Structures are given as structure tokens and as C-alpha cells.
Length: 474
Image (cartoon, rainbow, N blue to C red; front, side, top):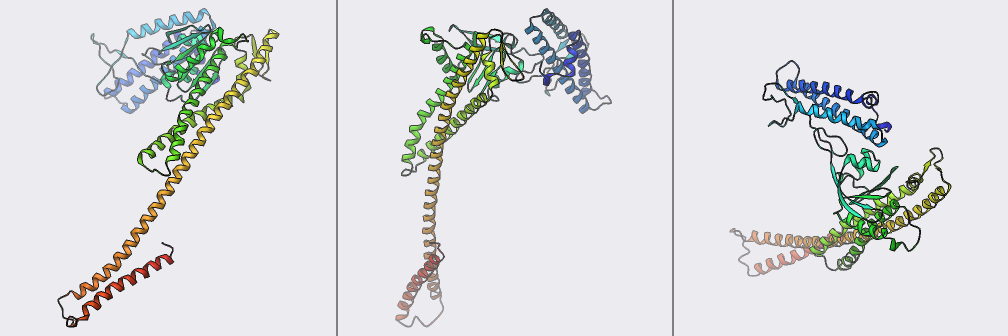
């Protein structure tokens, strides 16, 4: 067990009869939880808030104890000892005994409380707590995965396997399954290639797989990533396509097929998107319509998605190339070799195995560098197209700004003209009052007044226009 997973509970489990200790502790904590739940419904001296906290603490302690018991049983089973079998039998007997005396209670207020059994005695409550990922759930069956198994000879079969069987067959720990668990698809979206002692875990977009020495297990094969991976892997396993050359180990073939299918899908999407973006960039300066702008927006979003996926895959390959320890762990898989912790050198019992492992290490490095270059090419092309789309958006924004400026100038000219006409209307309104000014007695007064209003308005308009030009508003 790892250092970070050790706790006082698990240390106690590793000494003596851990199953009996867990049973006693579980019964004690369940009694405390029962008392806390009865306290919520009664009017005893303790507060309801404190009772709920006690119940919550009891739930966490039970989960921690059962998780420790589960991991200890798994380690004993992987070692192949007889102690693990007896432990599982005791555990099943204990769970059967506890399940006979327990009952799941649901209430309208969505809180678990004690229920009175038909014979009048108070039944103990079963605490049902569900966690995502690898956490053990009390009262809930362990998850069952539907996987596609591909043998090293190319035979494909579909079967169902639960978590316990998967851990035993692959030699993995419960926390390792999180990276390929299909139920955690949204949380584990970053690409990962994890090397373990007996298996390699692959998380490349919609492809989730576990590669072992003689087979590979593919999760969610109905996704586009799983289908593309199968189409790439199966021809490589055909002996007719080997061309008589030395074949790589099966797990390395799986890794190469996974990287190849992932990068090919990125390249294909980029090749389909590039002509459309180029056509939009050529049409946009002359046609600023809503449909074209919407196509540019969706294309830009697709480019951002492709760039982020290619960048994440590139970073994963860079991290893998910068860590020679992981590459050597791939090479010694299935061989009687170990890695020296001091200088990270390979030590093999058979000399030619060390030579083969060193040759495979060079081939794996060249393989990763090749796919790294292709990934960088995809990322660079996506970034260039994205920069072109952003530049076109900036150009469109500048063009629209210039048009808005022209409209604002026209509006300002109209406002100046309206002001001059309003001044003339004011003069006309003054003469339109029913007051005697004695100008109406003169024949030329009307024409002089009209000409004065028109000439004055024109002069005022040009004066204001000259002022605005001097202030560089026009």
C-alpha cells in the first residue's frame, strides 16, 4: 500500500484478525449512529444539530473502515495467498449477518431515521452513502463495466467485468481505475498515459483502455474514439501486415495504435475545417451578412477546441519523453528486469533481455517523437487558422467602427442643419404673433425678412461646420 493511503485504521487492520476488529468497530459505530438518529426524532437533552454531526461522523468512519478492509483484501488476493480467501469468506459472513439485522429507511423529509419493525423492536439503520469514482458504497453493488477485449492474436470479444475482477486481472490499484472509468468521463478529460507494473492505462479523449501483455480492454467502444482505435489496432495484429520484420510487444502496439488513431482524427477534422475557414476569410471583407458571421463564430469555436485537444496531447507526450523512467517501465513490462532506484538503470537476469529492452526504449522514444511532431503540426495549424479568424474579426470590428463613425457624422450634420432651421422658425414665429409691428404696412418687409432668415440660416450652418472642422470632429 502507498504511504499516502496508510492510516491508523488500516495499520490496525494489518495486525491480527482485522475482520473481527472491523466488525466490532462497525457495530459500535452503527449503534452510535442509531442513537444519534433517535436523538433527531426525540426531545432528549442533546441538540439535533449535534446529533446530525454525530451521525455524519459515524457514516464517514464506517466508509473508511470498509475501504481499508477492501484494499487489504485486494492486496492479499493479488499475492495469491490463502489468507485472502478466508478474509473474503469472513467478510461475506459478516455482511450477511449485518444485513439480516438492518433495514434501509426512507422518509418524506429525505432523511434516514429509525423504523419500527413489525414485531415492535427498533431496527438498526443501514447507512447508504454513494461516492463517485472508486470510493466504496455501503449497500450498493460494485460497478460492472462492459468492455471489448482484444487478444494479442486479434480475437475480439465483448464481456462484462466488475471492479474486483478488473483489479485482480490487471494488477492495478483502485485509484488507478479513475483515469479510465467511463462514469468519470467529464472529470477525467485530460489525456493521460499511465504506466503500471503489469498494465498501461490509456485516456485519450473518448478512448479509455487498459493494455496488458496479452490483451487490451476497451471501455465505451461505441464512442468514436473506441471505434477508430479498433479500426487502427486490428490490422496491425494481422501477421500478414508485419512484412516479416520484428514485431513490437503487444502493449506497445496498443499504445502506438491509440496515439495514431487520436492524431489521425485531429488531422482529419483540421483538414475538413481548413477549406471552410479559408472560404470564409475570402468572402467576409465584401459580404458582412449574419450567416457568414455565424459560420465564422462556429468555425472559431471548433478551432479553439482542436487547438486545446492538440495542445493537451502534445503536453502529455512532452512529459512522457522528459521522464525516461516511465519509458523504461514500458520496456521491462513482461521481462525479468527491474529498475535500479538509485541510477534508474535496468537490471535483467538474462543479458539479451536487457539488450532488447534498450533497443525497444530507443524505438519507443522515436515513436513518441514522431507523434509529438505530428501533434505539434496539428496544434500549429489550428493556431494559425485561429489567428487568421481573430484577425478577420478585428478587421470586421474596425470596418464596422468606421461605418458607425460615418453615420455619426451624418447625424451631426443633420443636427446642425436642424438647429439653423429652428432659429429661422423662431424668427418666423415672432413675426407670426398677433401684435402690431407696423412692418406689415411695408410691401418689401416680407421679402426682406424671408431672405434674412434663409441667408442667416445658411451662414450659421457654415460657421458651425467650420468650427467642427477646426476641432477635427469632421
